[in-house]
Length: 365
Ligand SMILES: Cc1ncc(COP(=O)(O)O)c(C=O)c1O
Image (cartoon, rainbow, N blue to C red):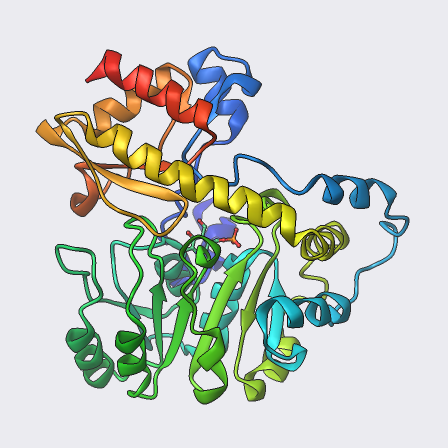
């Protein structure tokens, strides 16, 4: 094909070099690389729920008779059911295909091409990714050495750059720490829209949902991927100022939460007692994992309020430890960026996963 016919020339220029999102490897690839059957892979890289979804969700999915019918574009039943769980009226709730989609929608709704978005790295990669795809301008205000948000510099950056949108994950991925509510309030005072990502809320118990009515610039995002074990079905939701909801409903893809996702989320909300048990098991295992890792001279796990731990690896060996574990069928997360090059992130698994990890680390370290 001649160059002047190459359809790539028609691609929007800012998208030609956007970096792809660095996603975790799928189970099949991990299984193939390690030569270990998929069911024996110890998958501690995606912050998924190692207990899976509620057994009632599987039954509800099998029994649902309407997969041939489009789902409700207004998500009425799901938003109504969320009212009780979240403590916020349905008029202020919108569900998405994972909270990933709501991150993207927030940028699309508020940010014109070239406008600033404040990001506090190291943090979840979707904020910079969606900003890039939407043509926003990423302004980075790095977290301090303890991974705390630098509130004064965030406020300054909002003022200097005229930023409309700020992303803050609490607990933060990958550091596991929460941001104090007073810090969030302080940033909200600037008037910029603060997207407070509470994807790991169930493991920390800290939320600003009960204050959301007070602020018309606060957006809170949550997900069924982590606590409810529905990562593969892609259901997240957000608490938005009421005036914003009708605009979001207008611009979101019409059937963004598919029928299976809606059935699974609804049934999860009917089986909260079971899901709370698995959350408690993960919180208990988080403590055991922290203690077990602390026994290694070269490892320094950081305390976490999420379902994963960030662990410092001494001697520049983080990447090597990640690779050695992977060869043994144990997948943890390594981030190829300068701030995190001496860390691995380990999702909290079942007790037997912790045991397998510790046995492998004894061989490696
Ligand atoms: C902070 C944070 N927000 C959002 C998400 C995405 O969640 P979902 O599966 O709902 O898209 C993740 C997933 O890892 C995350 O760590």
